[in-house]
Image 1 (cartoon, rainbow, N blue to C red):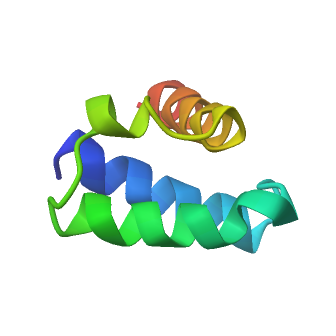
Image 2 (cartoon, rainbow, N blue to C red):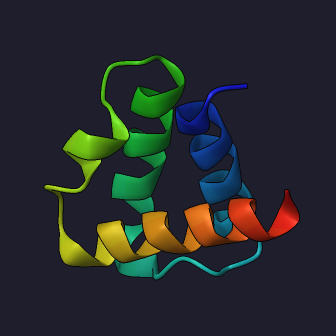
Image 3 (cartoon, rainbow, N blue to C red):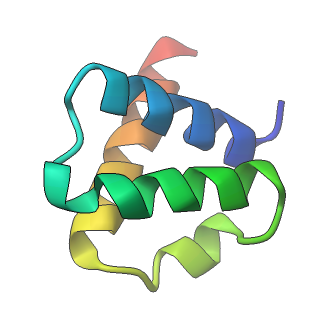
Length: 67
C-alpha cells in the first residue's frame, strides 16, 4: 500500500476515534478520498488549511510508529 493510501486509512481511523477536530472532518473526508484515488498528493495537501495539515502530520506519525 502506498503512503497516500496509508494516510487516508489512518485519517479515517482517527476520525472514528474522534482524534480529528470537528471543524476539519469534512475536509479530511474529502482529502482522504482524493488521496485514495490519487487525485491529490501529500505534497499538495501540505498547502491546505493548517488544521488539516496538522491532522495529516499526526496520521503520518501514527503510521511511522506502527511500522
